[in-house]
Length: 387
Image (cartoon, rainbow, N blue to C red; front, side):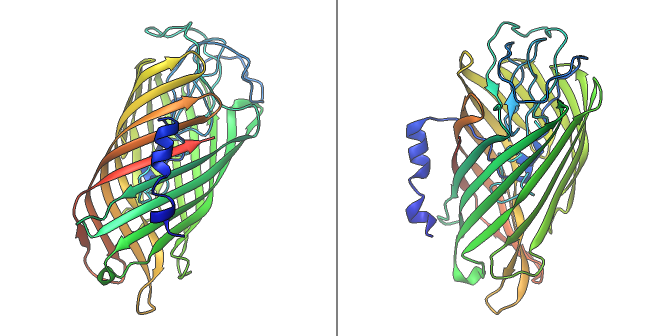
């Protein structure tokens, strides 16, 4: 399949249809966003089903969560964000690698709030982000980093679907996200890189609210990352364990933990940061290694919301490949990204997004070849849809 000819018009079509957001975020960073803040502080138990009949007001929305509920008062579910993609971090994949995924909390559901927090409009109609069924939706995203004079161009296609099951209440759930990713490379023959890189696997996410303050989250992703020509060390694991503490219910939470990326360059990374929602209009996610600032631009009752965001991304990943001479090796691509985007969110995990940004500090290296090859700066264009 030639992505250049068959998929080049895909982002343009999405822009014409809408502009907005999707959960299919593909970066190691984006997987981090599976940890939005858990707003559950009450004693009342939520029924173990996906119910959308309650009403309340808007809370901080978690964009990277497989299913979200932006409600925070006594009669509504509180929202969490990050499944990046999101359960949308794809072990730091080159776009997922960079990716939205994991942008855009890790607590897909929360419990009841006992009272309305200051600075929030308790009568604002919330946007129901989750569905009433086990199946929570399908996501597709396409991105391109032009080669130009940089020496390496990348076109990326991401596909995934999410299923979730609550255990007793919405404060204890597990979700499963099968996914497939294709990175098509445009490079000079002297670089000795494959024409395409693939990743296929499943993301398993578990979250449990321990008490009014603490929530535990675990993400486990077994996958195959290779050029489909080499099977040596193609099986990879990505894992993340997080502990979230509510400092100010509905407004400020702190997260800490550890990430195992399955990459050659950064095999283990700390995960830490703060998630602050000063008002329904602003969200500040100060977390390493994926900070993000979001501003709500428009809201149409409980029908839709439009958000703008600025985020930093650590892109890249490691794949098992076969070199031109037949040698099995490990190829690692890496970069840093500054991304500006807009996402249009609809009820029940539907929406679209478009984003652009600067890609810099780009490089590649092989495990069996000393040194690395650097590339010039480039731009990123990306779009996706969730349905």
